[in-house]
Length: 245
Image 1 (cartoon, rainbow, N blue to C red):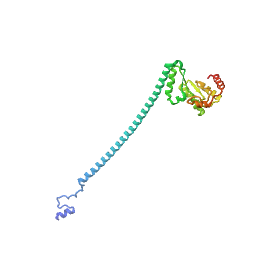
Image 2 (image 1 turned 30 degrees about the horizontal axis):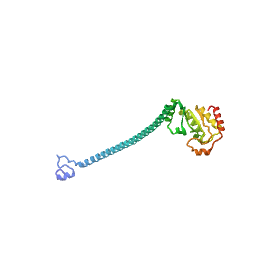
Image 3 (image 1 turned 30 degrees about the vertical axis):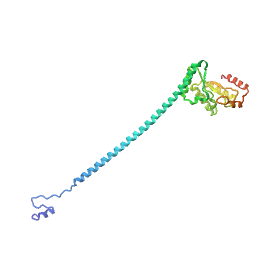
Image 4 (image 1 turned 45 degrees about the vertical axis):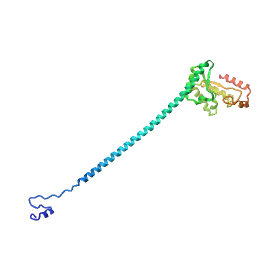
């Protein structure tokens, strides 16, 4: 073997001569372009992840900005509405105050009470009503509810108690108990007088000789209605005065 063909010895993996080492088998190595390709794939994947995260946070930021904008617009609209309502209420108070002051300035010696006709106070904001009543009290003027109880009496019985209580709370002095457009029995009328008095209000029963008188009733309608015997309202008025009305 030692004296054989060197090429044959190489093919068999044997040394060609005694003083030479065997030639090792070559190690398989990947080309460099394949390693670079794997690096680029990892880099592309990392970039794609970063872009996705960036897009996610951008959309989250845009969504938050949109929600904040909507919330800000709603709050601004509510504030504007509140300002408008306050201005309207302030205008009502200012107008009423000017009217009351002008009446007091011109004829305060002849004014003892202010009457809210037709339940007009029920259309006013509560704070505006209380300010007007307070202004009247400052000038020693009593305040009457007018005949709104006729409307309240057409509702449930408990509504009458709530109405009387509310009139006292807002500051009314006089509770008018009229029957111009409804029919009341004398005993029921007296019970309403007692309820008003127990609540701390001055009861003012309205006694007349004609049904439907008052408000915007036309003259021809009243003429067709006719009048009742004056003796009856006189006797009724005496009963009211006897209980302190």
